[in-house]
Length: 138
Image 1 (cartoon, rainbow, N blue to C red):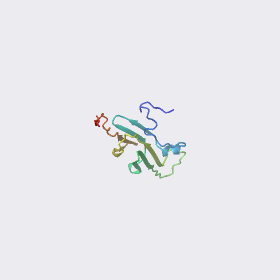
Image 2: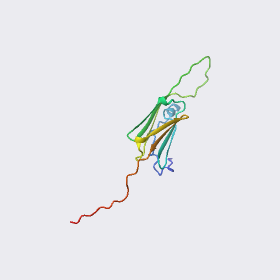
Image 3: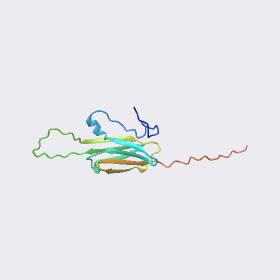
Image 4: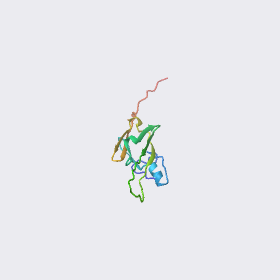
């Protein structure tokens, strides 16, 4: 069931993620995220714990925000015996379709505490006031 409250019935088109389903590996390939909107714009937050800023590529093209990157692993073993490891490493990619009123020329991003926050302001609304049109007499 699709939850529509809070988005004025626009969900799932608002920030509709390109989904990757399946295994735990596939879940890492599409990091957990959340999207919200407010009066001034839109916000997308992605969980990227352990990912360096230099390993993140953020692009906007054709009304789609795409975040790609890689969580790198380096491990030096010195006599430790590993029983299991649930840590995941590898490349990831996540794309989000922006709403029509998003100003994709003013996208900003911040990485803090393993969370990448992307903000997209709304475009200024074009003048919607009624304009009187004179009628010519013939």
